[in-house]
Length: 193
Image: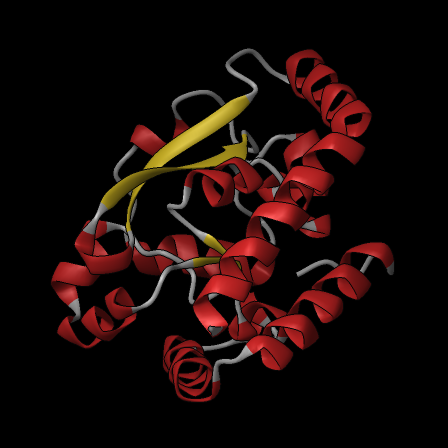
């Protein structure tokens, strides 16, 4: 029953959010285009439920093709923690700080590749490098996770895994609602993720 209610909640909230936020999405798209050349959206392959590969959709926050440069995972992690990634555009910094860059993932939710709440999806190389991450593939990945609302970039990789395991063990409708409400609060308060 939980999974049926969760899917109905995913579809309803995602469709309503996209409808209500349509004017904001248009303005964000304009700002992205004015700030730097390149597409408005960024799509990247991720591993989902039962190892299904899908394209996660976000607003583009980095310079065009910045993701094609081979950079060590630890370097990227350091940039995220210190919020000083040189590849990120001016508009991209604001989008990331507020979490607004993630709004297009509502399309992923409508398609069924993601849920509103669940562990964040990883890239295939991260799954290959750490077999312990395979346990995440037994659950649909989410736009928002317990780890994100608990400190995201300030958390170590081990802490993120701990929060993901906690979510998997305790998941339920009430926990999903609490995580969603905390995410809304973080965005509205300007604290972001």
